[in-house]
Image 1 (cartoon, one colour):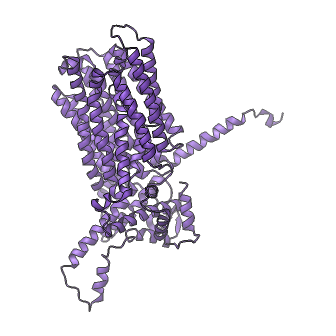
Image 2: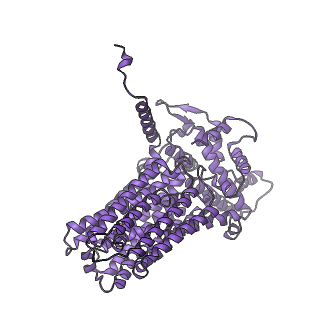
Image 3: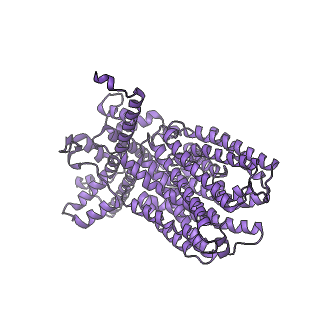
Length: 633
């Protein structure tokens, strides 16, 4: 019998195997940025857990008894909202601190500072014996949450390529909803398995937040710093070095009869482009070499290597400085962005795409330095710039609107909300909200795999706002026509319909207004105002979060179904503003966002990139091909 007759594998099966193999090879190739995204975004799991655990424990009898949460429905709602919303006062301060620490010490170290607040806040909450201690512990944890929301999206966005940036940053949302899911299921588990008279019923859920805090802290020690942050700091350090040199030279009169002194003085001339000249010159003048293991390197630079905390510690302990140690140190600083970028991309530093991406980064930094020399980087000058004003307007709108779409109101008070629509049993309401959070996680995973990279940011935000608004209007109408009866043993069909609409909302939210605001805000700003821009987004996010957390339980108690109509109106109105105000950024590199907002024309940026690469305009060289190659990365 012919061997071909024995091959009965369907063609479509072979195609599936090929796609799985391609997916696996892609994961292996991008393993370093995947690892970084998982570790950095793991901080969002802490954010989600801290946010969700309060809503899960405030309904537990043991917690209410331990902290005297009793009285009228309004008094209980007021105390509950204080416990939930105090977190966001800490978030506000944490975001302010992180905007400075991330600029001064780097993204990774700033997150390590945030871990201290997470761990200390968890300890205070777990050992609390009075409601005041709960408030203090929540505020400390809020400092960590504010740090995570300020730094994590920007850190990942700066490290990921434009092809994978949306998915890498959107993993922040996946970790956030995973933390919420864990909070609710743990709350449900202790509500039915731990005695309602035992303090363990509420201490166990709160204390468990310490475990992911420790994991997050350890993981950060294995990460490299952002290459874009390193490049920006390289220019800042060079500027300070020149300023110090000029200050020294000003102390001595220059004798024009000694030209070597004038030559030395020229070293401190602040000319744009000189910050990266050593890198581009080295890459141009040193041909690539092949190593024994088949990798390509540039001269004595070697293979791309990690620059994480542990590698720095080992180098400090076991590698002594030689006489040229200072010179070696300065050379390592000069090439640090290149090393970091090549390491994260998992390709040799001789790759044309690495050279092209570094050229684009340095071209943007040259433009910023030129603006600084012309006095265009003061805040007064920046706020007169229409491009900067529009970026801040977009970030402020997205940061505020995303909260008033009711996403966090449902997340924090899911048990209370399910009780308000007819699921009167506490354990039943916790179970319903647990299913709600599981659907959130599953649908977010589906969105990351299939849609986040396929559709635009603005398109997704607009469609999501419209659909969510319609869903909330339907819930409000049903609740008005079929009011709930607390004496009903089982939920009535209208109550089940309202629960189904909330579950439908989960899918819409997970594909649109869940992950996209984090992606969009992290890519809007150039490096010299990136901390300030993200800070505006974070401050408005947590300020509005505080208001929503404070007002939602009171709103359900006072106006009932009308609150759903308010949220529906805000969703639909915000969708219209989003469509008119926000430009699309899908498929653009961090540096190309300048072109989207009109800060620089495409021709100007191309000219600046060519200057960095050292080529003439209009020529077709290997460098221009490298730039085309970068466009696909």
